[in-house]
Amino acid sequence: MSFSLGRFFKITVFGESHGVGIGVVVDGCPAGLSLSESDIQAELNKRRAKDPTISTQRVETDKVRIISGVFNGFTTGAPITMMVLNEDVRSEYYESIRYRPRPGHADYVAYVKYGGFNDYRGGGIFSGRITVGMVAAGAIALKLLSMLNIKVIAHTINIGGIEARNYDLNDVKSFEEAV
Image (cartoon, rainbow, N blue to C red):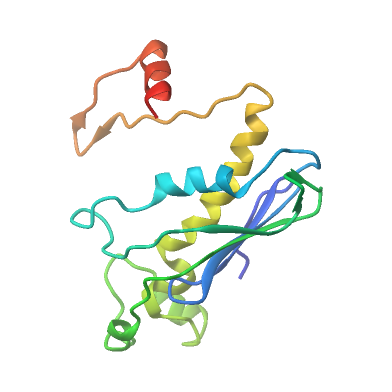
């Protein structure tokens, strides 16, 4: 099974929800891009759960480490490896449901695909936590796109039939300044 995406800017995510950590290898980033852990951390902080009543109760700092591909604050052209260690891991609950797949999760699919050798704790590689690596790679992609004066903006139009108001470009600019 491959957890790689892309051709020219290729990312490969690794790790599990209840393993040592989650990481990503980014291949195809040109040399000479100014890049620091704080650049990546700013995006990871946006992904962190803010309210355990409506999100995961798991509290993680998601502190990123750049392992390779950056030297003296600039990308080298070599693959960039980044990792975030898991801190709030409580795996004991998952033993009791090891053979009872959770509805809405990939537990059964993973069990069948990997013949029972899958890491069932917290969904393993199929956990939402794997998005840590995707967000870290996305932070690099955003920096590259900004060099071309390209900004990525997202807006939710409706949720469950409840419509959000429309925004114009001036609204978006004021949102950017507020963040």
